[in-house]
Image (cartoon, rainbow, N blue to C red; front, side, top):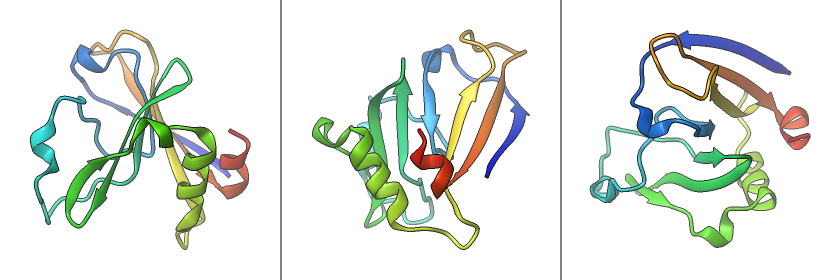
Length: 122
């Protein structure tokens, strides 16, 4: 099951060239103040990918935003964690990318939804 959808919006060029795996929101790496507890906000496991390489991985633990170590930024560990908690819908990951490398008013975000079978092909 690989579903696709698009949504139009503008985003700062600071994210130009970044692709995001399973993200509700993208954060620049310098926002260290986000590690404080924020119980009303949930950020799912979010892996930032640039040039097909995982660059950063954010997740929530005890109400705080955390960042995985570089040691865990590998395909095997990413698959292990994403497949650990399957949802009733069967979707294990959402891949978000932009329709062009330059983020401007005409750019669109494309979302692809993966079940376990499709995710394991990545």
